[in-house]
Length: 182
Image (cartoon, rainbow, N blue to C red; front, top):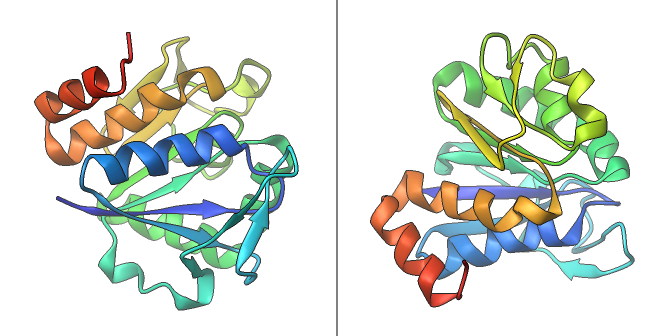
């Protein structure tokens, strides 16, 4: 089934983060919302404050199969500035465990050299940060253990792709019908 952690920094894009959490939880994936601020709630780019399940210091990374980074310009900068989170992103990638990012956040993977030779997508103005990637305009790209997506308008696609990885394409299609997606 899998267990994932979605990381929240001040300035995250609310829809990108919460659509993934919602879809994965509906699909039966254990999904934790994790604050990197060590606060119990984190405010997004549009001043929507969301209560977290855990703070970064409470996370046992051995329990997770995937780490997800939502976008937002400020949120992405704050995520990338968190050394502990970046160490875990690198460790997951090296171990072949899944990592995912949407909107501006795939730029973090580009800066870390993770996207070299991989298909990847991001918010259009961040494509130049996808260093070494084969950049596409697809809504979601899955390349080995790295999943990227373009933005708020592709957040449901991103969530369904993640659900499909852990529960199968049939389960993702069934959920898409349930939420009247397309």
